[in-house]
Image (cartoon, rainbow, N blue to C red; front, side, top):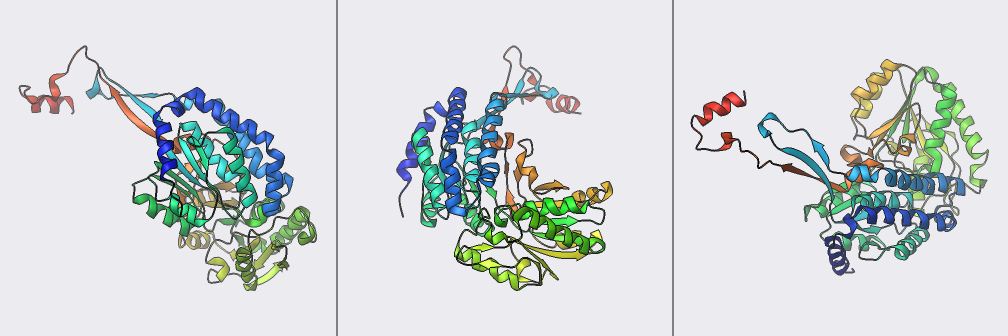
Length: 456
């Protein structure tokens, strides 16, 4: 395995020079990043097509466009975020003032996944740059064209001692994790997240873990079914279901099950055509191993829609499975593919109990027009984030920090959340020298009595 100690040493030296803390330096770096992304836009669209067969529309809307908007939002607000924040002081601190100074951690390691190989690499990098850090970016080897282009782009605009990209497989990540980074940001699976956290603990390095899990989607009896079906089909089957916040499975109220199943079949046909495997813009599964894992789930329950596969093209048709229970293999782990299991329920308590008996999900979606139903779900189920009457869309607003809870992750980012994640809040008390209150000193006459009166 390679030794990255020299690279990290140089980055730490560059960080200590103070350049990255300068606000104009950060703003200029973000501007360069934005302009170069625009220059490379078509090349990234081509790379995403080669790596995952993403259409230009999907690649732009879910990867490039959201990142450009994130940079715009960050540059607009960065001066305000970076200013020291004055806070109140208590009566015991008369004459003093309190401040919170956001400061960068130093050198950050960002390990990004293959499912959105551009967006999930650059979005955290925006936060690292905005907060004033240096960074090492490790993109996924499963999307080599995009990773190669990321390395080219970053290498073109930033010196290695500021931002570096390390390409390659798991052994490169393992080697990097031995280094004493000041912060680690990881997006990926729960098992690998545990490895990252264990490695970080050896240097007491703080981490953000953006993981996953089985994100439920509840369709209640009073839902707008046609719209629910369309939004669920979009959220589930975009990127061929290879989305950490995709609806993993459905809980559908028994009274509307048949009508909803008809609506979702219609929605899938509307979005992907009658023969999705012949659709040249339909995203493929990233590897043969993932394809075979997903194909095995087609044996579970009953295939109500879809089910066709193409091994050569590594594609699986948008598929709906019914007659599913928690015991089926498809319900044991996150699916991460275009297969949607459907379970039915009679009472909301069944749903809440079912979800609560499993690890806390990264996302939750509820379709209902009833305020009390919405309140009950929001108050009784813990999850990272989600939507009412929509799917995935909560990721698209920079005003909502995105992250998991429990085994679905820790920490959050997007918008100011990204700046906060890569910043340490340094608390500073500025004390007056014009006078000195004697209460704190042990030689004060009747000191304890006076302190008790003062603090009563």
